[in-house]
Length: 177
Image 1 (cartoon, one colour):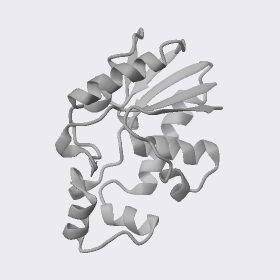
Image 2: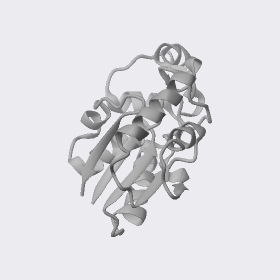
Image 3: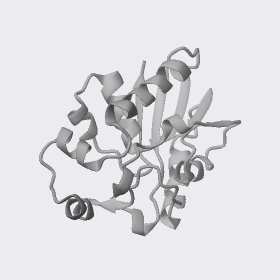
């Protein structure tokens, strides 16, 4: 089984570099071009099924794929960052009167959805929808946090290592299971 995890395209300018979590924002004009290019780069792969986060930035990114059906699933949403959603690092440091000290400390500073609950949500999606499937090629349009969590779950890296892997807008990775 081949799982292709794609990150949504670039978001509107005011949200770039921010912890956007579950706020429902559009992709930018540049993002539209990126999404088209991403779809073009993967056009020779015959996907048996396509899943996507139900948030706008993923819906808008996956629309460029010429596929039969997309299943939108809220399990693929980014982690909620509570009151930190839509803020960048400096704004969060000011709001919370803190700075990054370690991965665990920073995750707790961000607040919102419980991090262990987020990991369990993503893991449950893969257990119930993907790993019991007989599909060969699966495309998942999602967010950086979900991609990093999948790296943690499938590639045996620590959470800190997994979240340190670069996942730019409109990028994709393939995980063979």
